[in-house]
Image (cartoon, one colour):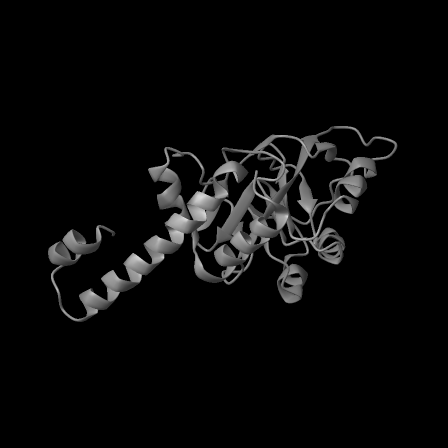
Length: 222
């Protein structure tokens, strides 16, 4: 099992040197063909990127306000750990808005790296201003208290069509979000870094006027 210090180093490599497309390519190579989340989940600002270990949250729609609608929601955010990324499954709800500015503020204060949600956010301009990375399917001004509740956290969920376990690595940029199973993280990062180098060399040769066929035969990347 990879220790936490090594994982932190690998995450820093992802953060500074990699991008989702090259990681997705490597996952394909390893037979993980369904690790990219639904394309509807987008960064609220095009410049936002997120890398972190998944802190999973599961919510469900409701149709009557419970006595303590925020009970598990508060507990889930207070359980965020430094460097983790909240990954929230709403089962693609269009009825509620689970995430907003105050949860972003609370998560950031706990050291959270960002949030990915298969539903809506609100307070979007404030989230953009604070620079906290959030990926969602859209925006809606409504509160969650009479529309949904958190039913569990730290559990295996499905978000954007991908199974996410607590501690798996999520990586998001403008192209989308990929999920890397924690047990293959070292191999994926190493191979992705190699592929970035090959892509850079390919680009240089193409800019020099070499034929794509010749460059592909040499480096084998597109």
